[in-house]
Image (cartoon, rainbow, N blue to C red; front, side):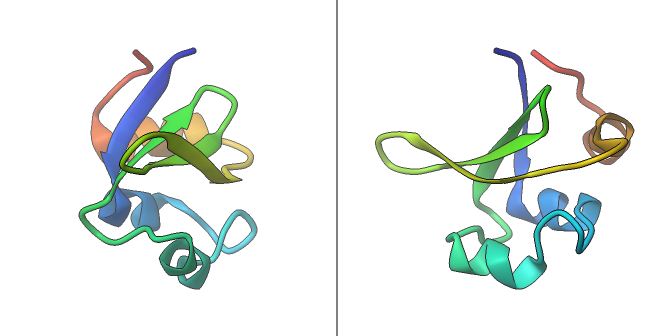
Amino acid sequence: MKFVEMTGAMLAEIIDDSEIHADDLVTAGVMPTTIVRINEQGDIEVRRPTKWDVIGGLLGEFESRVRKSTGFDWV
């Protein structure tokens, strides 16, 4: 599966309230420097010490938001 990795701060910039609220990110343990990844289906995963946890998902035209915010493509 392909992903784009980014920080929690970058994720907070591209999400909207219909997807996941900023307070929910904090509850899920996502801080500005936390490493997260998004797959091509829009699933948001946060890196834990021994695994990745799915914490939510992006909707709609998230591909362009991810590329614009990070400058990265799916790898």
